[in-house]
Length: 255
Image (cartoon, rainbow, N blue to C red; front, top):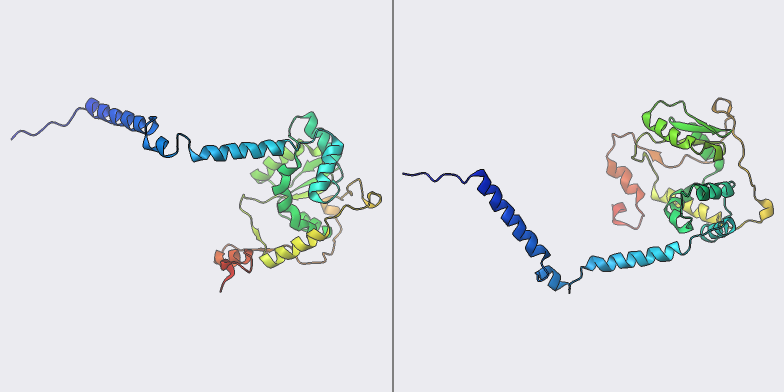
């Protein structure tokens, strides 16, 4: 009995190539069922046009002068711009590093909003006691940490250290967050933060940040409240912690 020979390698590749060409032809042909069913246009085209229209409206709100940028800040944030806002504006303009549209920073301000509900002394204490941190004193940034991510952050901070006030920057060792704040606590901080949203009399506001002593000379400030959130030791079931982050009205908190 004769055993059929296997097709040569060339013939196998040729058959695969012809099948691929035929498939592409069917998918991209003008008479394909896909093109016909959408009337020649894909639904994503409408989404692209809507996004471009919305982005154009957002760009139209860009500011080109310092007074205009400050006014946009007050209107959207409900507060005066912080000290040094004029220096930041000049830096952005001179380096062509930003399109100044106040809307672009909404997510950042939303993330920072709870901290407006915490006493400044508590924030300074927590940052000063953080294991990995970058200190800025007299416009010079430094760190005692040898963790490689801290070094990378330090390199970036040093490019703008001449513009920064005295501060302690707490650095997370990894990308994952390590502090989880129960929803009830977060809601309380957000309510306190909302009370600070007001345009104060200009005669009562400060125009310079306060100086901070070196870390080894820092006096102990007594916080007036407990630290923000709680830290997991990594050995407890995650759901016990994660479920606390959800609103009390969600299924995640159902018992």
